Length: 176
Image (cartoon, rainbow, N blue to C red; front, side, top):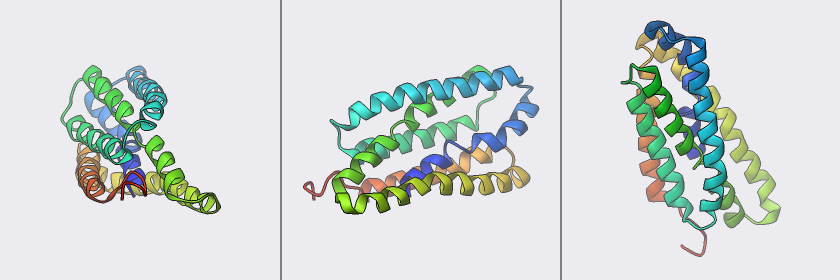
């Protein structure tokens, strides 16, 4: 559920790009820069968060990443300058990088080798489920509420889910 919601706060930008870029007069080059900043911070962050995950409680790392990515989405909907938008979308990339490594660590700790293929497949489907679901939600939001809602709604969902997971997620079976 949590990793699916990470995709709510990551893949919501794609369907909204054409709307806010047209409304704000953002060029394709500027959109390209915004996307590049995201993937640069995401890539670097994913490497670093993998190292950090080995030394950190996955409960705190995962929920903090989702919470901060959600807050960035809430802020993003209020922005009107392309360079500030690129900065915040870059922050989103960094916070997004805190999702997969804790999930991978959790799968190894919580499930035996004979269960991992099934559990990993279920977890891997969260990518598709999140992308599919947010695409439908954003299409509806764009039609009826404007591009800002495409960031506010996933942001609110992400905050709620991160707080819920903070109360339910545990690091390892030993910690129980």
